[in-house]
Structure formats: structure tokens, C-alpha cells
Image (cartoon, rainbow, N blue to C red; front, side, top):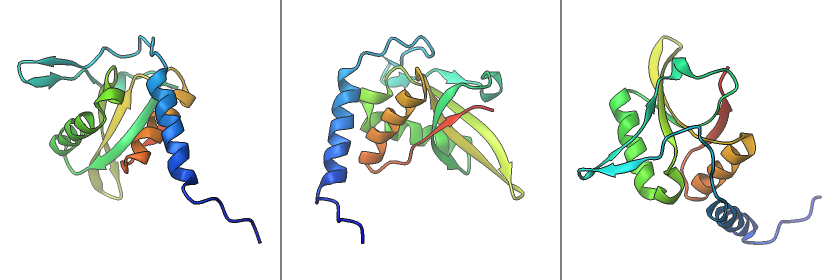
Length: 135
């Protein structure tokens, strides 16, 4: 039988990853920064069809409408403002099983490891996040 992991190990790992992400400096030119404007955040929207194959993204969820996806971005940007800065929003219309849905993704990562670190922070905060690469 495998040994039991120490209590609090997952929480401590999430704290370490969050501290590492906070300490790094992002010099990635992949996305324009999110800037405030007239009481509302201005977000750079990227057309999913324009992304080159191999672009590193994170998927933040799949929603019934584009408006719901935009609303979810606003919520996440409020909860994780220190990490969402410099990320561009990608909303991709998709279909599966005869249903249409909208993938909410963030762009602006140097590499897959950078996307994974970002997701570690969001997942530690109980939010969905999956690193993906465009095909």
C-alpha cells in the first residue's frame, strides 16, 4: 500500500506555485495588457481563427453563450487581477453533439510551463483552468 501524503501538501504546493508566479516578470509580447478605462476594464479580444497553430492558451470554461463567457472573464479578472493582467481574451465558438458552446480562453503565455503555472494559481483558487495548445 502506498504511503499517505502529509496533510496540507496540496495547499502548500499551491502556495509555492502562486509565490513563484507572483515573483516572475512577464516579458511576453504575445498580448496587450488589460488596462482600465472609464470604470470598465478594456480587454483585448483575439479572434480564435487568427491564432497560429501551437499558440499556448488556457481554457477557463465552456459556456452556453458568448455573453456568459464574457461575464465569466470579468469575474475571473476581478478574483485574479494580479495574474490576468497582460492576458488577452479568446472566445471560440464550437459545436459538439449538435450543441453550440463558447470556449473561454486566455492568451499571453511564453510556453506551456507558463500556462501550467498560471492554471495552478487559478485551480488553487477553485477555478477551472486547462492549458491547451491550438491545433
